[in-house]
Image (cartoon, rainbow, N blue to C red; front, side, top):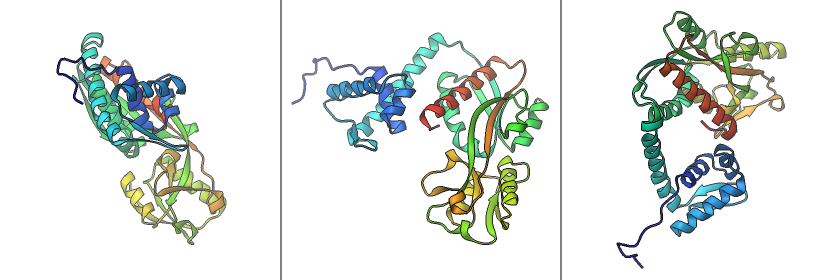
Length: 299
């Protein structure tokens, strides 16, 4: 039965929609609860209330996973738009108008995985700031930073080579990436896919193979993450990758597979001394993105 046109419709609460989006993006009530700073029981109550207001189920739940229903998929689009409009409206009043250009440098792998999320969120709250992105190797980014060609750089480094002026955003293990069900790691000599000279993942991998006494050959080289993934997925080679890069048809290989253990690496950020307001704002967004990743496991 259709409600009369003058019948007041219920209002959706933005706080509840924020929780709904967090669950949809993380696939977990527990991780979403951490992201929105609520208890899992409070999150469950919010979703129950939302479903009562709409008269529809928005999630399908079982013991292992949470997925959106068809109605949930429709609601997700509306929820994101409403939250974006809210951010835009509020930012007009409580965030000062900041204009300018931020020159940001990042390695290819994180430029592909992280920057889209950072730039999207940054544009929502600081639409008047332009971001000029440079993708290059960490060694070159540090040089450009020293020459004042960049305002912010994200670099990869080992524990012994973290620049004094850098702050660590993330520390995680490097693992051997292989194709699910693949056999590249069983071949002799071992076919390895590597980045160019200067990559700390490359240095770590070659040192570990040398200590193990494993025969290897460099079967594939690429400075781009997409090229590395292609070589692994085609089962042409194995490659050293951060653990967070593993998933889907990529699996982590270790001692049980005959592969030597690799060490941790750091992802660090350097910000130009006496940074301008736009640069400081961008740096804050990068920090927030990685703090969220530590909680949710997703960028």
